Amino acid sequence: MIKYIKYGFLTLIVGVIFSGCVAKPKIALEYRPASVLELEGKVSVNDFGYLPKEGVTQKQIPNTALGDGLFLDDPIGVFFANAVRREFRQSGLSIKTGSCELDGEVNELLIDDLGFTVDLITDVRYILYNKDKKVLMDNTYNTKLDGLSKFVQASVLFQNLNKMFSKNIESFMKDPQFVKSLEKECSENN
Image (cartoon, rainbow, N blue to C red; front, top):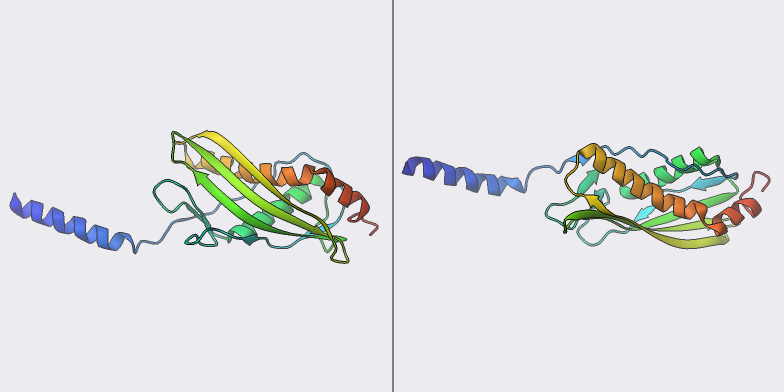
């Protein structure tokens, strides 16, 4: 009996020592555009920056509970810029070298799951320039999906993450300042 306890304890110690050496799993999250907006114009989209808190990597979506969060295949800034490009294409905007240029920064991206439910939080800054590099708009949009179920299949979590990204991008695309800029500065004629 003591022999089995001894081996069990040794197995536990080895497991604890090597648990920090295990590679963090990456998820292949694929963004699916959801907007039904119809817009016209030409806006090229640069990769966004990602400004996470200290200790968070460029590919990590942190969470507030135990664990490190989710790790994407691509850096968050690249993933988010690609999501914007897909939404632009779906809405009718040309993303080829255009009359305007969009930069952005993902300031916060968080899975807050400390309570009985999950909140998904985004804070993204969008900076739109005209062809002369004059800033047409510089706005930050905070979006939150709250009260989501905590214990769901991965596919449901991915759908909720997609919804969170889409909600933030749509807040930007619906902004009257953006729509006005498209008409005046970012049209096909400029």
